[in-house]
Image (tube, rainbow, N blue to C red):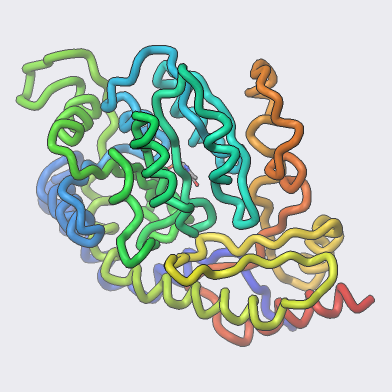
Length: 368
Ligand SMILES: *Cc1c(COP(=O)(O)O)cnc(C)c1O
């Protein structure tokens, strides 16, 4: 029987670090450090050190991290934040939930923010840019940050898919005023449940984020304003602390798989494959190809025991949730390309034989 090539294999990863994880969980239970406490502090410090940034605040999930990050910036109520039209809905949801308006901008060949269209979308109501490092590839964050400062805009980085990705050797999360990470189990650094973090180099924003996420209080029972409850729990913090030691190695395995895909899937008509960029370290959260035959290809691969995904089949402006938005987005690459995307298996579970099988099946599909 052929072995299945899984899209993702969290069980295999767990078994490879079972000793550390089981130890981490029992330590937290022994110390009853369930919410907040030393394990959360330890992870926050080590993740900040990993990113080489001043502050890291654990929160309940990546969506909250984005929402709280925006809130901490204290932007004018009702102002617009520009969000790429190709992302997960959390990026734009956080904008609306924090009392702001979504304005979409298009994406370029690498599915990240298109600089020209970004500049087109800036207007007198714009207060910030949400730069997403989608699929694990840093967007053109240096140019975007220059555009932000020229136009007096705040910059939020959505790093939910890009733990460890770098631009000119600097880890993403360091370029904006504030940045958000998700530790959803399937992310490159994933918890065993929901989790997230806000990172920033600014003390004032860090302080504000900590207070918002803990009922507006810095000192127990002293509430300066109404915040909310969005905290990272101790068990997940301890798991993340141990998993962080493996992140670079896991990202390297993803890079090896991506390199093999790129070397072997070039030159096929109607199959557009992603690329690396010299000054960027891509961490390949997803390996997304584009084809007019993506649905048929997915079915062929699935029939051959190869799992695939779609990220994302509907561009944000075309979601029912945004049917109220009047902005013209019909010209956008993001809108046109969304139904043609297909995500191949990607993760630290892959070995070279499995990646080779995926490539062989894809070539077979296009030869027939
Ligand atoms: C996963 C994800 C989020 C949200 O993270 P959660 O932890 O699931 O709330 C935000 N933005 C992007 C781009 C994501 O992929």
